[in-house]
Amino acid sequence: MPGVIGIGILTILILAAIFADLLAPTPNAQELLQRLEAPSWAGGQHGYVLGTDSLGRDILARMIHGARVSLAVGLLGVALSGGIGITLGLVAGYLGHRWDRVIMRTADVQQAIPALVLAVAVAAVLKPSTVNLIAILAVTTWFTFTRVVRAEVLALREMLFVEAARVVGANDGRIIARHILPNAAASIIVIATLMVGNLILFEASLSFLGVGVPVTTPTWGRMVFDGIEYVSTAWWIALFPGFAVMLTVLATNLVGDWLRDALDPRQRRR
Image (cartoon, rainbow, N blue to C red; front, side, top):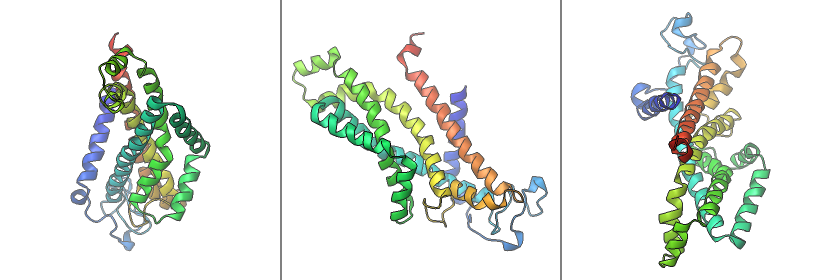
């Protein structure tokens, strides 16, 4: 049941992101005469469902477009991070020796540096853009995939079916692609699902600090930052984007937990 709820929430968010231009065509439209207006159900006079911000922009419209940025960062960031981390994990686990030492010591060094600090430092140097943000998140999180995949490969490479593949003459590339990677897929899928939520939260943190995407691009983190100074008088500016971040991360975690239980062989045997 929790997994179904998570999938339902993510489906709604994805559809909102895809059709954002139809649902809210003008997220940056300003109506200064209607600035800081409360939601319509809380006393607002002009029909804004979630109110307006300090420039009179519709909070709901900006949140819909913010979903597009957050989901793009989460999904594409995981795809890029996973591509790097899975490849290095396969190499480190299967080839071992010097490859393992170099890759894992690099992962240790990067893990010793707080990811948010490293991301802020790199983002401060690069030009703010969604593409740069995705690259930054991928470069600062790849080692999570590497550690998981390496651990799986170390166990799988000693299995009898891998030995049998070697005996019949399969080369290393074929063994990795046909035997090891498919058997490690369950763990990869689970960690990827959980990482989507982490990267969305990461993006919100960087946008809150002002080093994420350009300020003209609506993001949930930036909206929370914009609403901080109005918390006591216009609470809706920061509350609803913050709730959207929380709900999205919760949904991805629910899906990740559901996949972990569904793909765990010990659960299937019960």
